[in-house]
Image (tube, rainbow, N blue to C red; front, top):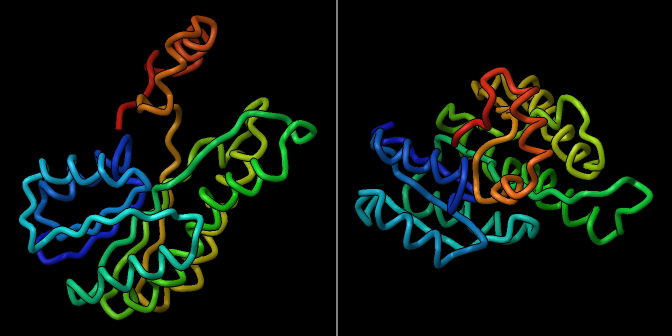
Length: 214
């Protein structure tokens, strides 16, 4: 990825952090964002990327203006954009009868709408350089989980938005793909280890008998 400019949202932990480190190891110029700015700044400093090839920003992906400004700042500083990794997401437990309007809006805004906002802002720049978009979706966007309705809806939206953008922009030379991981060992899933029944269920159902790793 030498000479490639890569944006990653939610890059301070889990899959986003692992992706950032891998891109850094392969020579990419990185623009990283997270709502946890101090944590991201500390982690980014240890990636071995020179300051001339690194931009770190605090971005709330549920706010379109913040994403638009981040993408504009990236293009202004590095002269273009080659890869957009839409990685941010948040979940909330509850049946439809239990989820508040505020919780629903937060999950949809962070997990689904952010993909739309960032892609809309980035596509003109990606088209100029025949770049690509990678969206972190989830197995929960392909099948349903009990009591996880808002997250299932949001990730299902990410999956089909990915398909829509892929066919809409194929003629522009743009590839749009989604990753759909199963349960992954990250900070956001650490609590599961305190629930033996959950871990037993995973060990029985997952082919490798364990969570995935970033």
